[in-house]
Image 1: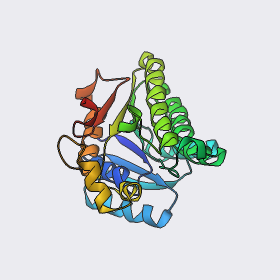
Image 2 (image 1 turned 90 degrees about the vertical axis):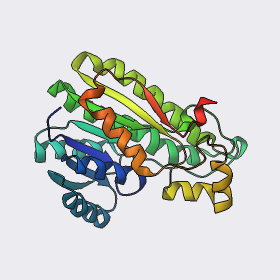
Image 3 (image 1 turned 180 degrees about the horizontal axis):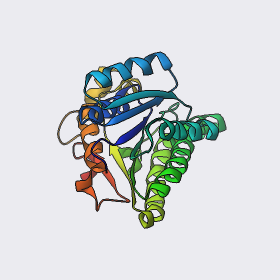
Image 4 (image 1 turned 90 degrees about the horizontal axis):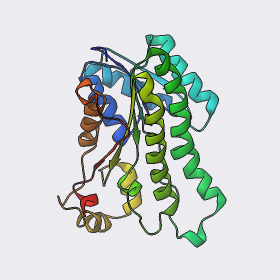
Length: 250
């Protein structure tokens, strides 16, 4: 990988995505952040430059739209000449509910972003990386990609699906020198976690199930992603690393 890699982060404006963009910027990478809110995106670009990024840009895209994802990836290459790392972070938790209350609309709202969005992102990222004969992709799964959780069947199944996509894409991409992996965060102090938990009492209950006894800082997930994309992880592909304080060890 080049000393100053070109990195694309989707869903980059908040939480883990934002922390990941900043972490790569601090390493001197050129970072392209994507999302659906240009004002927030341009503010993040300024922050990345302040943190030492070799270059930074915001490109708007809805990962549910094939044409927009194609334009996003082509825009990165047109502006910076290559794509070395892609972090497919865009995701949504959807509306909680038990299986018998799920609607087709509930399913589509989650799967269109979490699963179709990841698939379309990889489709166009791999198109570029195959021609380069190099690159790294890191997808965002969850601890719920390894276990069930009541009242969240759609979200849980979507995160299982991301692991399957990651494994299959890794097998296809290995032949042309591209690695594909995923991370499975546990409870992380983000706006999504706050929405899902619903209260500080519920957060305390959830964190009581974590062997380390706490939620993660988004920076801890970001640092693992930077490691997975680096050359010293060159034999790592097709894997999901669970960053969960020990939850999935039980």
